[in-house]
Image (cartoon, rainbow, N blue to C red; front, side, top):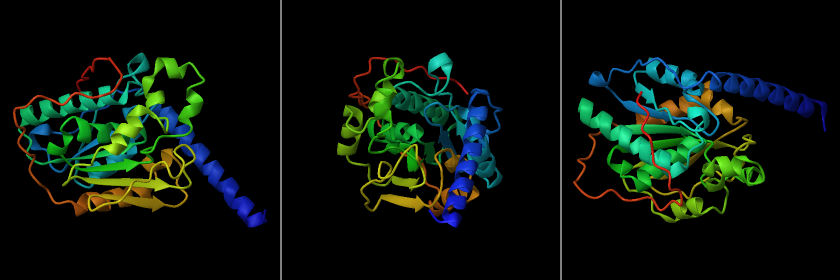
Length: 277
């Protein structure tokens, strides 16, 4: 290996290690965050969903940047082990998101459709919400960051640990799980943009796991040399997110027709608990 290549590798590993340490430091601070969004005067709403093993605190920098640029940003407590770390089954969390969003839209008479930005597993939660829980009526765009849309091969290792018995979502994120196969068979709703931002430098969600079949409403954006947790921290990732957000004009939420809610076909029998902000 040439010396310069080796030096670049060492610098990249040092940078990503520092980012990972910072990420987990934030994660262990928990889910308590200061409520800053005024839902009575919400403008360009953006919901942030963190990934497996994370908490709302890991979204701090992304939320700060979005708020500075005029977006009304909020997140949800996704619960899990010790009421934290986002370990519940994906459809259970998608239903939890759906119920919370409906409460907010009705309570505050919100008119604008929502953008969801989901990191890792958070992207799958957002996708399940849009496809299976009528989220297409409230959401105009879903942006995913390092999300294993085709399943994560690393999740296979989790099947041989106690995590497989404690957290069903580990099994759901394996490449050939019933959940991954089902959600990829189902058509993506027309009129809702789906953007998967990924990097071949992401060793946690390796390529091509985040890559989706493209269409008029679905596209992939590849970034170079971005580690998994760096999607939430690097400024050049944020500029892409910001560009995609600004490309979408404000549009009113669609009226929800009184009909029976579609039930998830997940094998999970858990009941969702809505955590108030």
